[in-house]
Image (cartoon, rainbow, N blue to C red; front, side, top):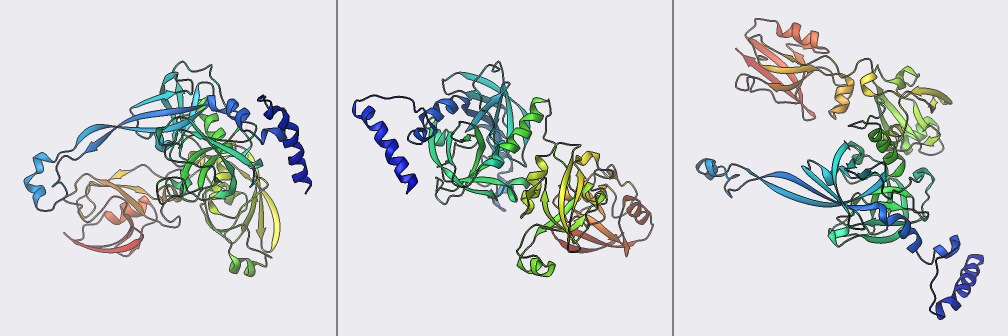
Amino acid sequence: MKRIIQSLVLVLALMPASLAGETRVPDSPGEVQLSFSPVVDRAAPAVVNIYATRLVAERVSPFFDDPFFSEFFRDFSMPRQREQNSLGSGVIVGEGLVVSNFHVVENATDIRVVLADRREYAGQLVLADEEADIAVIRLDGGEDLPALDFADSDAVAVGDLVLAIGNPFGVGQTVSSGIISGLARSGQGGGAFNAGGYFIQTDAPINPGNSGGALVDMQGRLVGINTQIVTRSGGSNGIGFAIPANLVARVVEQAAAGAASFTRPWAGIEVQPVDADIAEALGLDRPQGLLVRALAPASSFAEAGVRPGDVILEIGGHALDAPGELSFRLSLQELGSIVPLTLLSDGARRIVGVEMRAAAAASEAIGAAPVTIARPGPFQGLVVQELSPLLAEQLGLRRELEGVIVLGMENPGRARNFQPGDVISQVNGQAIRSMADFLAAADDDRRTWQMVIERGGGRVFLTWRG
């Protein structure tokens, strides 16, 4: 009731000016709620249109995929390149830098950025991170331009008013309003970050062309970069996602420092959400945290004392309930810093400090260099590499998988039994745990070989006779 009375008083206070045909800029936070124009005036000049040109291969024969006619039209079905144009949005964040979505400028050969006042600049991609779907573009001669400040995206709450600014369907710069509908939402596919990611959800209408545009709060600060929608029709259904500003700020910070790619701390850890059954078994009053399933030996989490079976409740004071939240929180940390981790271990809570290290700093790194097998036999011509836990993680394989992975083959006819991505885990009954194991097993003159290969999530048994 008190809020309703305050609103009525506010409307009555403004009514005489409205009846007299006068307009004025609202001079209090309460009056801003009656018009978003002061926020738009502050934020819109920093939101830009991005025109990206890329070359794509185009098949010119309708019989290219036909198993019979393709043989007759082989010479006429060679792909040719054509230009493809895409439209998206971006946000100027200072120092001549514009942030947008990776998918807006992916493989672009030419980037053109157009400001709200119709000034145009050539853009150069300086940092691209497919995992977070973020790209940073530097404008030629665009240092002194309006820019948005970053809001603390951890401080936003469900129900906060927000505006989405972008260029939907190419109609021109458009502003839509809504609220924060949810936090820590998972996206709808894409890179590793998107697959289990951490997004801000809004009901402010977001449509194709809004990608890379701004989601701003009532102070005109950048809350997030609009990136995805959930839709059945191709248009807005009131469920849109934005990349939180805190992650965007970290990526921009590294781009401004000259980095060409975003470096995030490496966890070397495999976790799963704690469901009701696990919570009951652990004596928790409700499902919370992440159960640790496995750790790489070089993981800084393992060095800090985290063990399989522990439950990670918080990192840096932020509660965790989904694997994507852990990935997101790690991405926000400074490399080299020590971050507190709250654990439930053997029924007791404890706090440990975990050093934030990049993947390249892990002692096992990616593993040994690739090796080309020259010895005659079933592996001749294979290019293989030892599969370390870190490499398995980067390739989306099970962390506990051991063996050597096939990267390619210099003699496809000879090594026709293998495919790139195969993991050779056993040779003639001997388990392959390292490159040394594989080379020792391959150094044999026998005529019959038996191999176990992990392929596409399944297991293949091969017999080779020379």
